[in-house]
Length: 304
Ligand SMILES: C[S@@+](CC[C@H](N)C(=O)[O-])C[C@H]1O[C@@H](n2cnc3c(N)ncnc32)[C@H](O)[C@@H]1O
Image (cartoon, rainbow, N blue to C red; front, side):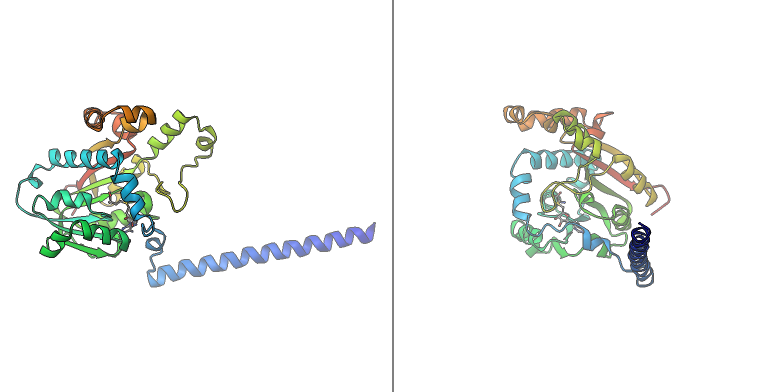
C-alpha cells in the first residue's frame, strides 16, 4: 500500500512538472512574440483579415446577384445622395473605396465623374472589379491597389472614404478605423457600413436558435460568406470616437427583408422593401436593427 502511495506521489509530481514546463514554454513564446511586435512594429492583423480570394465569384453571385446586394447598394446610394448632395452632380473629388471588392459602390461615384482609389487584399476581387470597370481603369479615373487598408499611405487625401462590409472581416477594427480616419480630408466624410450583431441576435431569436444565443455563437463557418466578427454599433461608435470621428447620421440597411420568412421575401418586391427600409431605417430603434448599419462620420471639430 505504502509502495503504491509513493508511486502515485511520484507520478503526480512528474505530471505537475510537465504541465508547469508547458505553461513556461507558452509564456516565453508569448513574451517573445509581443516583444518582437513592439520592437519591430510587426502588425499581425492584416495577415488574419479575411481575403476573398476563392470566394469572389460566390460573393458576386450570392450577394450582388440577388435582393440582398441590391438593397444594400440602393440604400447606401440614397443615403449618401441625401446627406452629401455635392457629390452628385458637383465638382469631381478624390474618393477612396477601402476594401472595395468588386467596385459596385465605386461605380456609383465613377458615374458622377469622381476619381476613385480602390484597394483590396483579394487579387481575385480586384480582377473582377477591373473587368467590370475596365474603361474607368484605362482612362485613369479608377486606380486599383492590391494592398491592405493598413498599408495604404492616405494622409488626408480624400473627400470621401468608403468602407462597406469590411469591418466584420478584419481582426483589428480599431487599427483599420485609424487608417480610414487618416485618409479623410478636412471637411470630408467617412461612409462606414458594417455587419450588425444586433440583427444576428434578433434573427436567431426568430428562428428559435436558443443554444446559439446562449453560447453567443454567431461567427460563420470559416471559408463561407458569413462574417467572423459581427460588430455592435455601440462598440463601433466608441472606436470611431477614439480615432477622432463623430457620427453625423445612422441608418439600418436590410431591415424588413431580413425579418421576413424566405417565402414572404419571394412574394414582396425589392422596391417595396426598399421604400419601407428607407422610411424606418433612420428612426430609433430600427437603425440599430438592420443586418448592416451605415454610419456617416466626419472629423470632430478641430481634429483633422
Ligand atoms: C464583403 S467584401 C465587401 C466588398 C465591398 N466593399 C462591398 O461592399 O461590396 C469584404 C472585402 O474586404 C476585403 N478585405 C478584408 N480585409 C481587408 C483589409 N485589411 N484591407 C483591404 N481589404 C480587405 C476582402 O478581400 C473583401 O474583398
